[in-house]
Length: 140
Image (cartoon, rainbow, N blue to C red):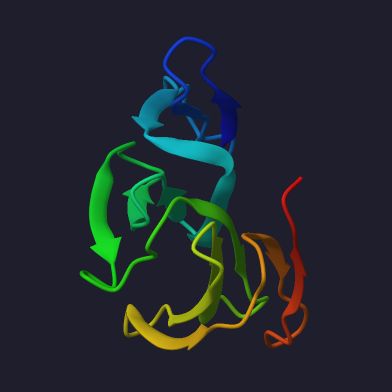
């Protein structure tokens, strides 16, 4: 999977290549209203992208299309700026300009916790091991 930020439409454009396929498989593409940095592979054939509307979109790396939203109705109150997944692929952390970090259970596809209290937008999160998040936040 490779992603680029569009110059003219500001959308995130992804190209999915199947390098493990036995035969030549044409690349698939997908465009989302998102920042290209707010994407993580969550399962073998799925990725999650945080959108400018504050939602987390799960999409299919094989078919190339958006398949569903994570935690319907429980997204962020502003654009998602980053996502990170634990090594065991069970938890996802998302960050936003709404000054929150949200922790998601990927098996149940439900919101577990919302971390409040940041003075500015939260720009990034890093999950190490079984998600001991280290949050970096700021405006730049």
